[in-house]
Amino acid sequence: MTDAEDRKPQSDEARMAFTPPAGVEVGDSESETTSEFALPKGLDVPQQPPADREGSAFSTPRGYAAEDTLPGFTPPDGIPQISLTKDVPWQDRMRTMLRMPVAERPAPERPHKAEEEGPAVPRVLDLTLRIGELLLAGGEGAEDVEAAMFAVCRSYGLDRCEPSVTFTLLSISYQPSLVDDPVSAARTVRRRGTDYTRLAAVYQLVDDLSDAETHISLEEAYRRLAEIRRNRHPYPTWVLTAASGLLAGAASVLVGGGLLVFVAAAVGAMLGDRLAWLAAGRGLPEFYQFTVAAMPPAAVGVALTLSHADVKASAVITGGLFALLPGRALVAGVQDGLTGFYITASARLLEVMYFFVGIVTGVLVVLYFGVNFGAKLNPDAALHISERPYWQIAASMLLSLTFAVLLQQERSTVLAVTLNGGVAWVVYGAMHYAGELSPVASTAVAAGLVGLFGQLMARYRFASALPYTTAAIGPLLPGSATYFGLLSIAQNEVDAGLVSLATAASLAMAIAIGVNLGSEISRLFLRIGSPEKRRSAKRTRGF
Image (tube, rainbow, N blue to C red; front, side, top):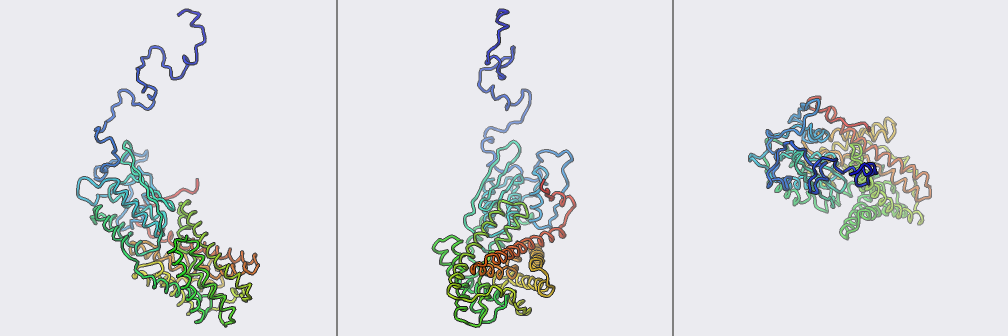
């Protein structure tokens, strides 16, 4: 090459960044362009057998033997010594570890099975998703569902798993080690049903799986899960219909109704329940089920007003609304929002809004026609609710009892939730009627006690807190504020109606936040274990 050729500007191909410098030998294979991802020469990396490399995530978990499990890496400040004592409920232990980084979680306890090899990973993940599906469909909070799923995986030696819960989708991912392929599985929750007996049975299964002294194989767990799915509801349909009528009658007594009002509210609620069952049998969405269920109680109240009967029609309609207000979904939605599951919380609160709009539509249609036909419905009746402490306490306990039946609770929990509902109304009445405090503040305090007692009972029995809290908040639901707001709107008093509906929304939020706060207070002061466990459970403050 001449000096003139050396001074010529080189082409773009000659100046490419991927062109090797002069004197460096280049192979002919095309894999040289991927050298960034290749291992350096001289680095000795242990290789797995070729037969074991393909699909290694689906093989038996290596960490099934706790004594052979090694941490992925050692943090700079060492691996913390975390004491998770056996007398702590599995919900708290699993929730604590879920909030920790994967590398800092303590090694799993000795597995239940005595064999050297555990069950296949896909089957464990499938069992985990099926259990999570039953819990989420039963109305359990997203955080408790994740804790249960993590407990099931950990009981079979899968400590490197990450469950994820949204409103309709459950997913879980497991990675045996940093060099093995991960495996993921998902399941969609399409049907929801309220059956707290089934919920309690699932909790018992998870509790037995989490207990190191209880040896449950994967086949036995599948068999018990199938039995839980096949179990019939503890109460027949006619008992549920009668319970909805008694609930509405008890609610009408709470707002000042008498014997005739009790009977009228019960009849209207039972008719609405039958119409809702008919709509469900025809495959109509729940929005229309709530709409048709709200019409008969309102129609009975309007009919009594048009007949000039000496009854309190507002109490009849209010009692019918108590049986329809979605208190369970509201509490679960607010709880998910307060615990950081914002997507699930938004979906649940949106569901509550749709149900409420359905109720509003059904009642407004009846009230509109009633007002046009000359029914004298008085919105000011909300200011003249008579105080009858003994009758109201008895009615609140009957309301909680019938609410528990509608939720398909176990018979052993009905008495406890009935007493809890009576205590809630006593606290509310003492603060609001005797102490003349704000109804929102009184409701929040009463709901906080409901959540506290419910969490204590759940810890005592190592079960879910929902059966002890959901029915007990029934007497606190804002049925009267909802009705009088709708009545004002039907009479073209929109401003007054919106104020009353805003009060109903404030009472509903006070119930949900109070229940969650009571539960968190019980967890705060009843923790058992070392301070390190409390440190590992801390959350961020938004930054």
